Structure formats: C-alpha cells, structure tokens
Length: 296
Length: 117
Image 1 (cartoon, rainbow over the protein chains, first blue to last red):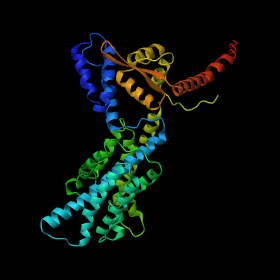
Image 2 (cartoon, rainbow over the protein chains, first blue to last red):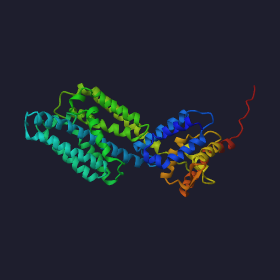
Image 3 (cartoon, one colour):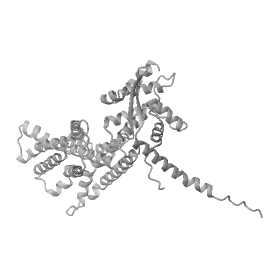
Image 4 (spheres, rainbow over the protein chains, first blue to last red):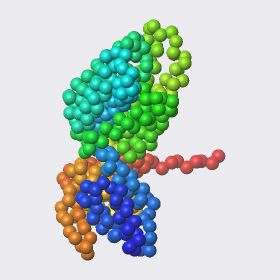
C-alpha cells in the first residue's frame, strides 16, 4: 500500500473518537493494509462512506441493539432531554429579559413574580443535568419545580391564554416522558454535561420568547425536525426525538378547540396540519428505523 | 417449523458463518465471508468493524487472541455458544422458507399438454 493511501486511511480513522481509536485503530488499520488493492491511491467510496457513518454512529452513541424495546427507551430518554433543553431555553429567554432589561438597565421589576423566570432557569438547567446524568427522580422533581416557577412568573396571564401560547407544554411534556424512565432506567451517555449545549442551540433554533429567533418560526422548528430526520440515518432515535419537539406546539394549537375559544381555529389550521403531518412522519420513520436497526 | 421474523442481515449471517470453523482476524473474515457467499458479500472494513462491535456487544462473538504479525495488530474472533445458536436458528429459518417453494415444486404434477382440436 502506498504511503499516500496509508495517510488517507489514517485521516479517516481520526473521524472516530480517541478512545475508540486506541481500542480499535491499530487493528482496523492493519485490515485496511491487507484489504487494499495494489495500485489504489485513494480509499474506495463505499469504504469512505462506511467509515464516516460508523464514526458518526460511535460519536453520537447511537444505540445498536437487537432489542427494539431497548432502543425505544433510549429514544424516549433523548426526547425528554431535548424537550427539557428547549424548556430551559424558554426560561433563559425570559430570564435574560428580567436580568438584562429590568435589573441591569435599572428599569426595575414590575412584579416580584418576574424573579420566577431566573429561578426557573436555574432549576431547568439543573433538571437537564440531572436527567442527562441518569438521575431521573431528581430530574423530574427539578423539572416540576421549573414548571411551578414558570407558571408563577406567568400567573399574570389567564390560564386559558397560557394553554395556547406555545410555551405551556414545554415542561409537562419532558416530565411525562421521564416518568416511564423512572421504572426502566436507560443508562446515561458518556458526557452528560454536553447536553447543556442544547440550551443555546434551542434558544436560537426553536420557538422561545427570544426575539432574535422568533421571526424564524415556525420554519426554524420545521428545519430542526427535518435535520432530525436526516440525522436518523446515523441514529434512529433522532427522528423520534424530533417528533417529540412538535408535541408542545401541537397541544398548544389544539388548545384553540377548547370551549371558550371562538377564534384561532381556522387561522392556525394549516400550521396544525403541517405539525401533525411532520410529527406523524417523524414517529413513523423513527419506528421503522428502530426496527431496522434492531436487525443484526 | 414456523418461520420466525427475519432478524439477521445477510452480511451478519456470513460474518458468523465465516467464524464457524475457526477463529479469524478482520481481513480473514472479509475474505471468508466473500468466499462463502460466492462473492455476494463484499464487506468494507468500516462495515466489518461496525458489525464486529455489534456482535461483540450482543455476545455472539468474542476476542480469543491478539497477535502482532509483520508489525500489524491482529485480533482473532470466535463464535460464542449464543452466536452459533443464532446462526443455526437463522439457517433453519432460511431452510424452512426455502422448503415452502422446493417441496411444492417437487410435488407439483406435470401440466397436461394442450390437446389440439
């Protein structure tokens, strides 16, 4: 094998995480050397594709198990974490206004209830970390505290309006999804604190009260769902977690069908239909992929 | 025999089949799987190691030896009892599926020739 080809294989191996390379790298490289056809100067396309997909799967911690049930538990955990990160981002958007606009700019608080938002942010971040570490009981308690604080802070708005404002379900949903995890505890991933990065990303890409990303909605949310769908080639759980992101907006829009709402139904019908369509597609494709990946 | 749902892909089947007789290292598994499948299964190295990770995790194969040959690291894999069982179950499933066709073909009487008026 030429030195050029050797270097190319070495570079491809660097796609894998360090720990994996230390365990498998020398052995894989030896197999490359033996399998390399004489005269070849670059790795075959299907070899590159297999290595890229394999490396991404290892990095993503994609679950490879013959038990679809195990994969579903893991997908549920990922969905709960994603929703919790989104909820913490929502708290961060409000807390940012309270801290920077009201306190630091000297405008002062209009009500002490506003302090519920920064407190909810702290509780939400801790809930996310606890869930990511696999401490599900603590995570549920902290998420419930976050919900309580957010509802207290928003209590100036009548409950009926809160139900349809798109933010109400952001906390009950991760709590509900985490409840089954209390019974069957899927193991925590390698780097639980990495989930904290999902908060600023959610702030930018998902619907929150953050002004800079509000005008991108609902397209940014649907783009994130499309991204989840694409990523499900690597990790089947992503499609299911992406579908879960749409549950909150769907439930909020369904709030317009509660008694007492005369308006808001026909105006939001197209949006509700597209959310339902996307969610059905994501859950359907996710389920099929989980089954497929369960095959040995 | 009832036919259970298909649980094994063709590359996995031939990787396990390649390890039936003796422990093999990575490249030897690629060659043996290609030979047993009559050239149908041509495993890339990336695909092979993803499958080996998965099969090791499912405890269907295990590492039995590690050697350095000509400065190259080699790890030898063998089938576990569970791996052999999984392979045989899959083989039985395919035999049962094939019998549905082969038995009927054997029993079917020759078609009567059309009689010209």
